[in-house]
Length: 162
Image 1 (cartoon, rainbow, N blue to C red):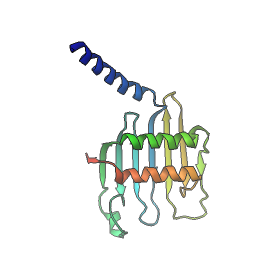
Image 2 (tube, rainbow, N blue to C red):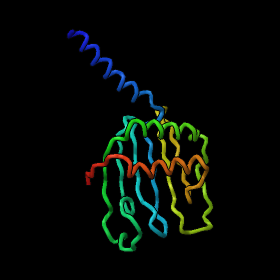
Image 3 (cartoon, rainbow, N blue to C red):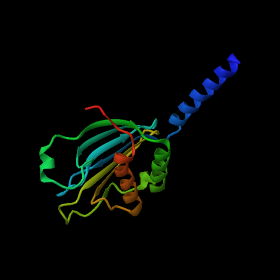
Image 4 (cartoon, one colour):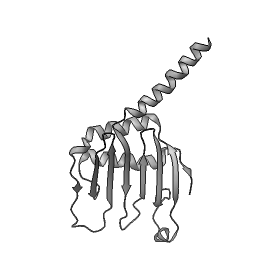
């Protein structure tokens, strides 16, 4: 019985480790910049073990728009663990984007009040990709990924650390 318990513990630990090691993404980072309104300003960094850091500046948790919001201090730094189901959805979204073949820049700067997003992916093979998107409409699949990242701010459990 003792050996069976030890074997089960070993298999459990090994399966958790292998899941982390098999991820093709070593870090996933999404940053949403400001606009001339109440666009959420934040950066989220996600690791392959699903741990995440959310750096919230403004308009992430408030309802409505107030110019006074800019005078308030930043909302804070939060830590959490992305739910496994959501992490798997995110990986599937990124896989569907074929990230390595995306353009490095999207958007026309003819309009001056749109937010800029930055998608930074570090791959397990040591390569990386940075996509800058002024207006957040580079492709339909990118827009869906941005929406997913923005939803993570409110559909995950976050603990304020700063």
